[in-house]
Image (cartoon, rainbow, N blue to C red):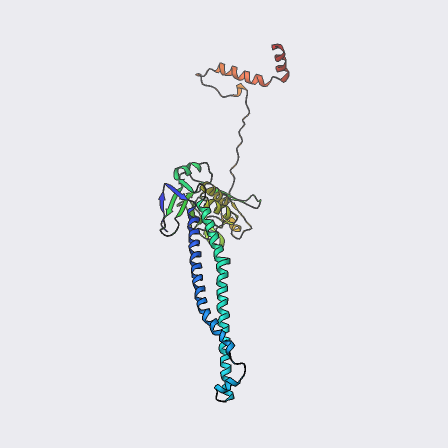
Length: 345
């Protein structure tokens, strides 16, 4: 599928629902027309059968007419009577079969097809009435909105489109993540390093979903589920992540074309792993995250005589007087301030 990069996309969120509803309406109307035509054919075949079956009343009830027709032969008379009985039995079975087909068609049209048609019309009306259906995606604005996101590399977002003649257009949003730290989701202190990843989010009627790709020179793969070399423990193939509980929120954000939420959700997925999951249990193949040592700085104020030597160009006397005043204030107690307030009044 060939995608073209665009700086700006205007997407009608209602378009997929409108097309799907119109397609279902057409299918329902075509099916209803076909079923009604079949019902008409069955009725045309049923009418002469019923008319012919009325002749059963004229069949003799005694054997004498059959003996006369058979020239007095009992065996021939029995054969004639048996053939006529079997003929009327087949005729009765055909009538029952056509009536059953007609009844089934009528029930399907009334109970199922017409109900589906009404539901499709309702969905069409709802899609056509969707508020704020037009969504505008702009590369520069998205890059600005995502610039404060720790799961996004600034300037990496790209908007792509694959235009279809007979189906709905497909959109793809791609971006790059920085190196991330994935932590255990089960309360453990274990953490691993996830190298940078290219994320592809495809939105459309076909091939929708999230996939991961390597970043040239930066990404590192390790042995994951089923022995595949993958970028993150929770992947079922070289490019397919197993989103698990994230699938629903990701699908909702995709339908709303909420790119900021999508990037946030994918980042949350990448920043954790479950060691009790069949895929997550292989997390130990990834490099362990070792926290950097913390250095402490004494930030408490010091007396003026402990400050380093100042240059001659600085008015040291003025600075010393200011600092002396500051530290002198620290030595004053509440009673000093109270006495001063009483004297001033």
